[in-house]
Length: 497
Image (cartoon, rainbow, N blue to C red):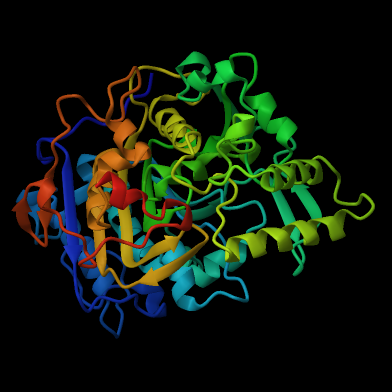
């Protein structure tokens, strides 16, 4: 059985959280592949940027503040991630690439919802120091089914990072983990569907059964849903006591997974940082349970407003997603439905489980977190962690309001590194001005279980903010106020404070 590398003597004891805030930080231009402006003693990248790169400097300072390989800091041999990543290891950087830039998006709105290539570049440089030339780094995720992969890499700057490493002959590649991709026209109609992995080698099915956090809901015979997918397939993945998820083999084959997520609100679970980012590890998104069909009168948690008209819209949405794209009037029906949903959102009526009463989505996300931590390469759940996991949260430009798809950009000017994803998210809640106990995704991640995400003896994190030691409860909102909540969470955080 494969086990992640043990902590070395160079690794401080306990969970580490490092936060860097720079009031003038901004993402650099992609020249020189987001290289640093200065030749740090440990730097192996060759090229340097002619302009300042505050983001690279902040990532380096995070690793220094975390106390990693402190004895060799400032020397050519400094290897901060070497305590977590062994030479020759395979590392997957799970990025938040949620969707490409749409005509109505601004550059700021894209930066509010997707990680930036400059953060990725600095992180990968330090991964390569640890794993050496025999190791391999892959970055990517499974974005929304109609996301244009090449476009999102280009818009975020990740394509420039990939070009830099390819020109240097470094073992770095990008991977789109989706095994089912829909192509839409400008009116939102599905014009074609691409099925990948015909040989079936990239899909690994993991059944959590009674251990799934969705299992307590099964007695009520819920109709689990994920928007824009055939509901029959979603229900089949969660039927007869099974709770099956289709993971991408690239994740399970990795020795370590590093979450590179966005500091951002999420309409279904409150925040989307490291924990929610595990959704990007699946191959088939129709296995995901984002909500339960209909309003409360139908036993669902899809709508905050339990209106008959909304339940009718849910039935129409289901009907559309059981039909082939070439059926008569299918395209016109899709345009009609998307138009109705657009008008309802403009009227600030939450749809698709986008409200604080969604009791489904957080369970699914934590199921996936446990799978990534505890599943072996063959898809078997074990009780021993199978791969190292670290978290880096990009909040140089953060997202508030109706994330994850249409957040409003805010200049938070902050980065966060943690060697435990759940505790990193807990600290991120405080940076956003939210009480972690009010967000089930975070609060329930800290509970004891057969597959714990936090060691029972390690729930108190050591925090350094710009190098200064402080207790976690002293982390203050980085904006000086709470992030604006998604529409469906309006008033919730105030009531639970």
